[in-house]
Length: 73
Image 1: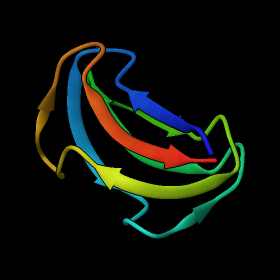
Image 2: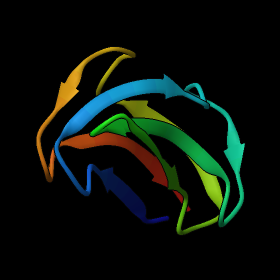
Image 3: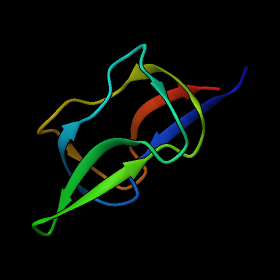
C-alpha cells in the first residue's frame, strides 16, 4: 500500500473538513475546503483509498505546502 499526503496548495484557512479518519474516498471526492481571499477552494482526492490521518482542524490557518491529511491507497 502507498500513502498520498494531501497538502495545501495555498495559504488559507481550513473552512471545513469533509472526511474523517477511516472514511473511504474516491478520486475526485472533496476532502476539505480552504478559504483564501474570501473564496472557498475544494481540495479533492487524487486517489481512491482510505483516510488514515488528519493533520489539521477546522478554522486552522495553513501555509502553502502544509500537510492536511493522508490517504492510503
